[in-house]
Amino acid sequence: MKMQFWSKIKAGQWAAGLTLTFIVLMAIKMTALGATIRLPLPTPVLAVLGVVGFILGLIAIIKHKDRALLTLLSIPVGLVIILWTLAEIAFPH
Image (cartoon, rainbow, N blue to C red):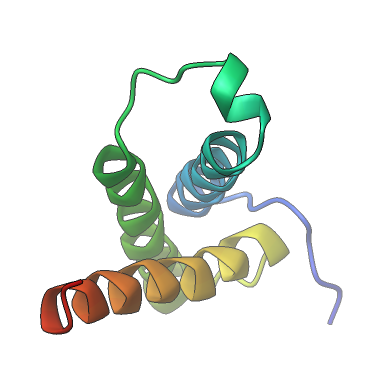
């Protein structure tokens, strides 16, 4: 079975796009580039992008049997966001 890089299904395309957007914007915020480029989006808004990408990725994988690489990438990224948020709620600092 040949694995595709980009999905042909709309839900998979949206999942990949939102996940990549989350990764790029968080990378900008976390690096020194974030000090020069002031993003008007707070981190929780970016986290919502990642979680929506996770949900759409699950829909594409379960309902449409999508196996594109970027669609599959949305699952671990979304899980990290959800687990990080739950850890922040359970163990505030």
